[in-house]
Image (cartoon, rainbow, N blue to C red):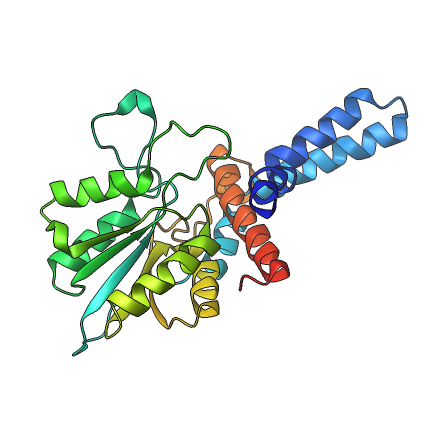
Length: 256
């Protein structure tokens, strides 16, 4: 039930969800004062969530900053979390296409090729609620790494998990048994790293964060960035709100 609610009800907290509710209320309400308040609410949501400067500042604060792995005498396994990592749309298969979060597996590949990690654990499978025919992100990501030259014996796949909590829960026994003497490098998107660290630490796993897929950028003070809403800012604010809501929900559920 928690999984279903976390994937559906968060729509109401998103900028588009709030705009939809406010505009629908203004449309169906017969009270002029309430209509006006609903329209003002919709305008405020648009101007704040669509403001590139505000959204970027929030993401700079929330995202875990870029990391450089320190030298170590112990072997390391990179734990890559799926979720937008590979494009599972049947329309683009059998070719392999990375998804919006494909930088996660790309960073794992770079770390492996540079010798900074010796093994790769891909955690995640099919994350859809209704459709089960959209493909397996874990398998597609494994196929990408194999095509890129990573030997099969250096890739381990955990494809039962559907969310971050299950990523940690199902990865823990693999790491504790197969990679007992390794250091664990956690690779996920920068905006998602706080929740991921919390879930793995809840499983008594010490991880080294290695964030990827940064959304925040350099500060801009141009008028269009400071004053006017943009589609990109709305998109970026979606990720920020989605992750903050998810982090709070995980706190309440005791997952972190």
